Image (cartoon, rainbow, N blue to C red; front, side, top):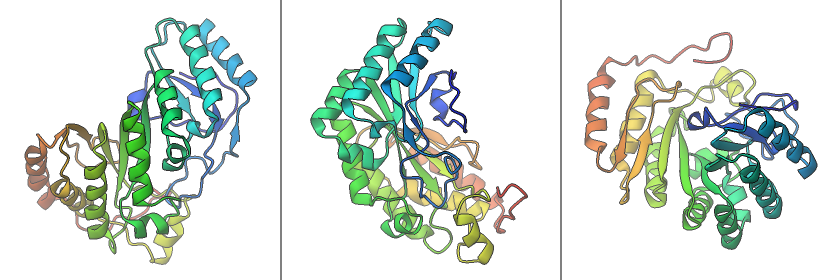
Length: 295
């Protein structure tokens, strides 16, 4: 649910499907990841409080029943903490049934915030943040220009959890291609095990034509995984994950070949059994790119 005239595509996590989408920033301040095309057509800017207040006022008139709200675009937490608190306080005052606010948070955003600032944001109503881990392998992260390291990502996620926020983390199957699939799987599993996020989602790499990584696929310097390769990589990740506290795991995104889900570590063996039953049936031929650049 969006009341906005800023233009450009709008993105949100699947679990925020019924949320009011409040775009406090436009685009992504980093916007250099070679696998991502989400904000390539948007020039990054931070909206003024006056502009945001107007959107909230219009939203409250049109949809006063809103219960959840999501702060977009790619990294809302780049805004100053006082601005974010002003926005959230106005949202809770304007939507009488509002009970949760969420936002994307990059590792860099969380690192910049002090523990005290994150606690202030949690106390003001920021209940959940969504952070893209993508990979725990530093060579993969550097190759795709993610702008962070595994160590910084771990520090960032732990700060969010320490502040009392729920942390929903995303990892990207296939991001290391064929050449780094083993390292990508093992190091990603090690990172998420050390972090132990509240929720973890595994998505599969899809490379559109306007993503810089597409050129590497075309010239043969990046070899995408096959269908079987994606599933084998997920199998390897799950086998190396050693969370101690419950973590809700899902790989049911539209990009994934096989929906697998449960709570780690409790349901790991059941999920592995599902994968083992399906992997032999999966295609082991490199997928072709269609006209849109998707596999």
